Length: 369
Image 1: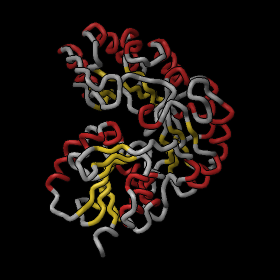
Image 2 (image 1 turned 120 degrees about the vertical axis):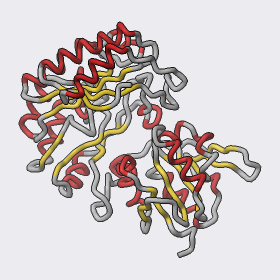
Image 3 (image 1 turned 135 degrees about the vertical axis):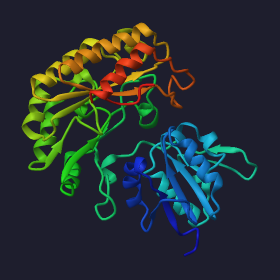
Image 4 (image 1 turned 180 degrees about the vertical axis):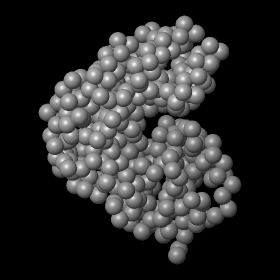
């Protein structure tokens, strides 16, 4: 096969969701576990970037390398040291058009939403592309690869550590119930991708209970897992009405909540727009309705003191004492965010010991130092 006609998606476990969305849009493409001749397409995060850059720089194949995803979109100049083209932001429309232009030797500058180096080695940014309509693109092709169903993109909040609004915008776009229902029929367990599952159908600030019920009712009698991994929910969206719907229609016994800190000062500095009390109330309501709350916390946020960390530990001890669980992270500055140039705060010895003890008792997972 002519090298320019062979299209390969670099597949690894952590980019499976992106590949499942994009492969159906490029007929005849392959999933590859190493660089191959042809057009090699990568989607990756900041955590994966060093490994990917090393792989591409050492590749011996005759390939054109195309990058997309959170890290390339936020750091295109860095990415173009290793790649020929960068797809910036959403790829559903941009990637197929770019491939078509490459294969037919068309005008690369006509493709919106990309970055590349011209013949003078100057970096070129083409015109920004409009946001995609999720209903126009399948969440996966069951003949290629199954996937969770992305029901929402975008976030109206502007958390200082988060890339979501920079990548997908501040307005929430929702896949329609009809399309979600169509693809749910291919899944034994119906799981969703969303920055806040309980915001489905809403502006992302005020929940719309009737939209959530319409969605869950339409998916019956499927095995639905809503408000749990790989989605999460904001604590202030947790209320009796929504939890009653999840109890009625869904199979999950857990609710994944983004708490992020037990310090009110830190919540304000990272612009979470909810309170520590919201976390406590949300967890209590989950427990009252028979759900195990699994709450995300981030340690090492910029400006975090030992006193702030101990406030978080206080909430974690309360939560785990009630039967809840914790998923922990250690802050990593992400490009394109307000905190991209910030230094992580050190973890105190006392906090490290407490978290280690909780891990031994299987009350926390993740990384906290």
